[in-house]
Length: 73
Image 1 (cartoon, rainbow, N blue to C red):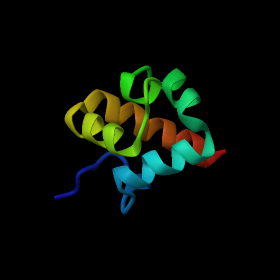
Image 2 (cartoon, rainbow, N blue to C red; image 1 turned 120 degrees about the horizontal axis):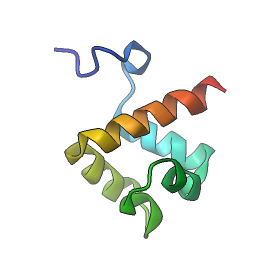
Image 3 (cartoon, rainbow, N blue to C red; image 1 turned 180 degrees about the vertical axis):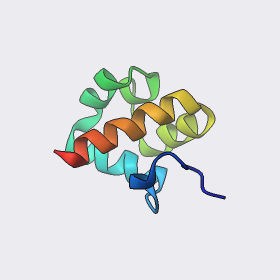
């Protein structure tokens, strides 16, 4: 079953890849601005972000959207 039926642009891209690339391209501070969640703003790490995003569908969707916006530009 496809995890993201409405997001074919994300096919084959893992959540870890998304968070890693965003943190490298725009940084944690800008990520926290775009998606105001504690795991990006206070002592951010890939591990804590993945744990939170896997349990929080609305935040994951916002991060995926941010990733699509950043990679398009």
